[in-house]
Length: 260
Image (cartoon, rainbow, N blue to C red; front, side, top):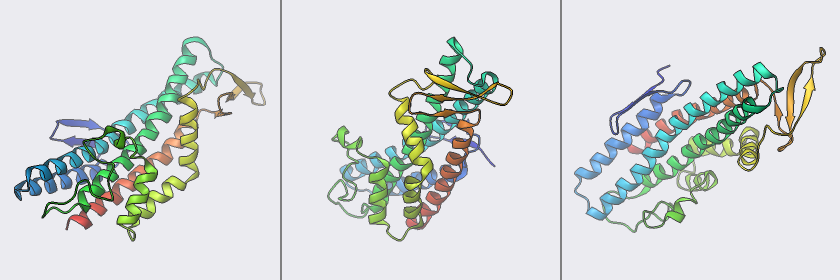
């Protein structure tokens, strides 16, 4: 698998292990080309500026997927190494390092998914808004993507993206996929743990679980009753990897279909 994300503007060249960067890069390049075509159509300045605004939000979210995913992988590896060594029987600096790893993993992993949905919202706005004539802006189906009200941008959350894509592209396999992700037990669990760790320490306050030889092999955190094991992050990571890669392939096909 080609895992090197390379983009010319701005200059990006970085390895993203385990991520399908080819369809991610393809979607960006196709939308860059689409934006260039719009510029050549000599659209009214205000319409062109709006198109550029929508593209910039798609681009930053799509690159955000890659960056957040790589950081998530690094936190997963760090946690597994720490926990494998201590089996939860730790304190002091190691306790801080373990908490930092688990916090970074769940926060940045969910951020990768939220970038995916945010980028889809911007992508939908770009595809749906007429390019051959002036129109009322923003598009009535994508009213939150506006440069005039930052508060609206905060409302572009996965549930909103799912609903608008379902309305605008009701027969799309992509619409079905992004709905299933949000309904999955893995997404729900990830969201719950992220919410816990964003508000309180997950590693302080724990009960040890021993094996038959009276050695610690897991701990249960007081914060949300989370069971910590050496493979905690790796199991969630496998789901995130599969989910994002399937999503990126689907979006690449979706872009190709709607720009042709």
